[in-house]
Image (tube, rainbow, N blue to C red; front, top):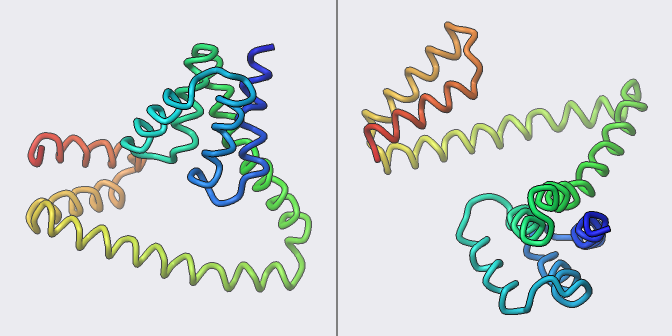
Length: 176
């Protein structure tokens, strides 16, 4: 029964909460502290503070930690799944609707308008990363990492994840 309670404690706030992690934190606190009594308000605040120091979305970090604290590894997996399940279900429903009407002129027009916006956003993101990289690591390291990454991606069938790991290894060896 504990696994079901862990699931509900994170699924309900994420299904009714709107606005991302910071907006649902009070809802999660109500479930974890108020409803189930798994931790005190002080312990929840410390968990929140720890979660804010780490990268990635706050809700999934807190779900994993609290789920683990309450029910071990299965609890962490269930709580994390319950946190992302509402978004996953909504995305699947949206994709199902888009797929059902994929031949509609309105859906095709919408897709045609979305592509350039995504291209501009990706270009802006790339430009921002480039400027930050030059400022932080220098132009030589940026050129080496970018050049090797481009060569590996264009000339080989190496998976992009391995190229990213190679870039991280380079950064750890020469920039860390």
